[in-house]
Image (cartoon, rainbow over all chains, first blue to last red; front, side, top):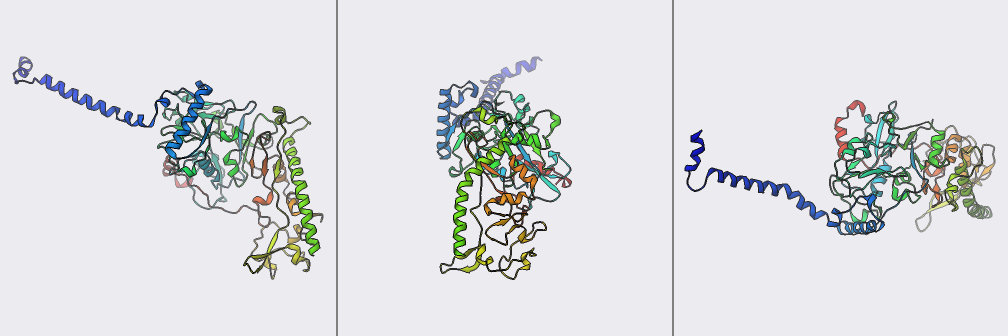
Length: 310
Length: 218
C-alpha cells in the first residue's frame, strides 16, 4: 500500500494525478464538442422565431399570420417557389367520412399518385399517404396484401384495397404522442403540427393502418412541381424529421372541394362527404351498402369505410 | 340529307343548352333527396341559406362523327355523321360484329353482351339511338339508354355511389361535374380494360415489407 501511494511522488515535475486530470479534461472537451456538433448544424436550419414558436392551439391570429408569412418566405428561399400558405378551420356541422368501393377499384394507383402531387411529397421516395394493397380474394387481412405488384390490373383472382389514414374516432396515434403535436379536429380530421412534432415516431408505431409517414430527409421537390395552394396543417412542405399523414386534403375539403385522390380515381370507387348530412353521398353508402371497416376488432372506429357492390 | 343534318345540329344545340342546366338541377335534386322517405328539407340547405350549386352531368356534344377513311387536301381525315352513309345503306338487323361487315367500322372492338348493332342504334335515324321499345333517344341522353339494362348502376349513380366526379362535395360552396356512362365505359366494349399500375411505391416501410412477404402471399 505504501509503495503504491508514494511512488508517483518520485516522478519529477508532473505528477500522475495532474497528467490524468489533463487527459480527462481534454477528453471531456472533445466529447462535448462532438456532442453539440449536431446542434450547430441544426441551428443553421432553424430560425430563432421557429425555435420559440408556440403550439398551434396556443397561437393568436396574429402569431399565426406571422408564422404563415415566415413559412411562405422559407419556401421561397429554400425551394424557389411562390406559394400561399393559409390556415383553414373546420366547418360547423361537418364531419368528414370517406367510403371506397372495392368492387370497382382496379388497383391502378392513380390515387396514390394524385396524393403525391397534391400534397407536395418528397419526389425521390415516391412518398404518398395512400398505399394500394393487392389482396387475394377471400381475405380481408391487409397485412397479407402486396403493395409491389407490377403487372396489368385488375388480376381476376385479386382485389385491390387502397389504405390511407382512417381518421379514427379513437386515434391511438394521438394518445401516444408525448408532446400533443397531433390531435383530432372537430370535423374528424387527425392533423399534425409539423413545427411541434419532435419526430419520435411513436404515432407511426401506434397506427395499425400504417398510415403515418416519416420525413427521413428534407423533402426534395422542384419549384415547378410544387402545389402553391397550401395550408399549415396539411400540404405545406414538411420539415425534415417530422411525421405526416393523410388529412383528407383539408385545404380542399374545408373549402367544399373533393379530395384529390377522389378526383383522380378513374373508376369512381371513392365517395366522400359530410357524415352529419343524411343526404350526403357517403351517408348513402352507409344506408344502402354493406359496409365494413378495417381491423374493426381494434375498436378504433375509423371514419373510412369499405364496401362491395353486391 | 343536308337539311336533315342541319335540323339535327340546331335541335342538338337547343336541347344541350336547355337540358344541361335543367338536368343538372334535376339530378342535384335526385342526389340530395335519394333515400329520404318523407319530404324533409335537405340538411345541406338548412346549414346555410345560400342556394345550392348544380350537379352537372357531363354530356357528349351530339351524334358521333365517324372517320370515312378519306383525307382532304390538308391531309386531315374526312369525318361524316352516321346518316351520311346510313341514309343510303340498308340496315341489317342481324349484324353482331364488325367482322360481319365488308367495309367501315373495321377494327371496332365489340364485346357487349348478346346485343346487335341495332339493339342500341336506330335504323330509322342513325343520328339517334334506340330504346328497347324502339323510341328514339338522343346520343346525349345515352344514360337513359344504358339504364334500361344496368339498373343497379343507375340506382347507385343517382345516390352518388357510381361514377367519377370532380368539383365540390359541398354544393353550397360550388358545383360538381359527374361523368356520364361513356366517359368511362366504351359503349361497344364496356368492361374496364386491364391497365398497368402507375406510381410504384418506394418508401422504406413498403420495401422492408416486400422482403418479408412470402411468395404464397404475393
